[in-house]
Image: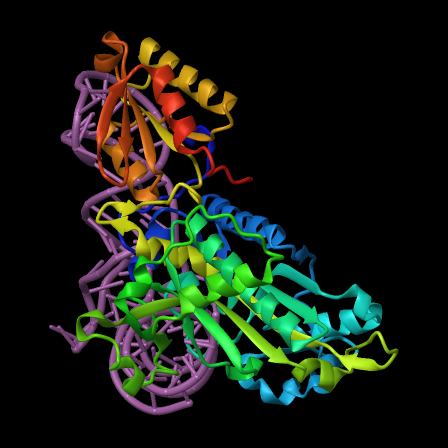
Length: 450
RNA sequence: CGGGCUAUAGCGCAGUCUGGUAGCGCGUCCGUCUGGGGGACGGGAGGUCGCAGGUUCGAAUCCUGCUAGCCCGACCA
């Protein structure tokens, strides 16, 4: 993409309403624009990152054997009356009446809809196990939306639902999700720690929240510092392997890590004192096992091998997709702006032409642009008639992890500069080598964008 | 929902107390110079002063009502 043809309305000054760094940077980098309280338009740069995150979530869900689909944002109140949650959910649910006077709602979650689909089409134990998921906009009418996309009213969420014949099968689904979530977050450059949590209005006994440590987090968390040393890394996972998934789950949840809702001071104090940590965290996902709560209420049964109806065991699992943008920025920025992890960056590298209009510099930039595109990389070429300082400032603000700087001075010696946004490290090398280097860096980090 | 606050050009703000027909910085447009960390000079464009009503010869400014948004707290992917 050439910057002169793109739409990137960056701001030099901080908008007054933005208090936390991710909100400020998303506004300044021209990623979002507030439409009303807690509701945002996603401008091209923000939309690009949102789609990349969404695609990582899809890839990891499908890798774990979960089936993508799409349910509507508007739902009928009838299903919610059936589950009993129409009254339980309270003011947070946005209720709407259509022209015929029918009660509708903008879905805050989808347990009812998915259970309705399930009971209509699944009748045999032989169709199990089944895990369906979608990535769809939700609406929760928060009393006080704040922090930009971190606590919006309208937000994009991946929510999935597993249906299993037995509790054991459902617990495997639980573990499978825990593992797949770990991989999902790691691919985005995040460390999200699973913590024992409270189930809230979803209900159920077993639940973990995934928290990204950040000073601006809304949750207070307590943990054993050793948990931050555990990484999934490159290890091979067979998501059908019950024992392996359980082992990984146990590895990641053995050490103490809880939110304030479930914090147990006595157990916390059993940790050696030098490893006790209290901090703040951003909740980026949650997994639940809730047994037959919805299947019993809504009559979701299958016929077992003996021909008798069995209420299915269910769980649900969510990832706050739009919130993740905020969480990633909170975890990865500096005074000059955002620093995108390679996995989610909107463009793979920026090309800065220091002397726009100089025949050699222009030609060199075009050649790099073509070479990057040829190997499947997506560059953002700053071809504006701006001075070097302005171009650098823009690149730093929008946070592309790599920058190729092209100027007449370097070109005389046949080199350009490759600079890491994160470390500031700078290397002079021939243009072709810079492109090769980028191709190697992004090997394994290629995510379909838009 | 309790407490605090704001609304004036795309963004950040002054002007309101003491009424007289709206200003600054950034951005933006045109031109010249410049060219390795938000450059300089010159010239432009851009505003129903959140909305409605009232007081007044005259309202951004005073009065009444409303709306929207922000911050702190109690609740939540």
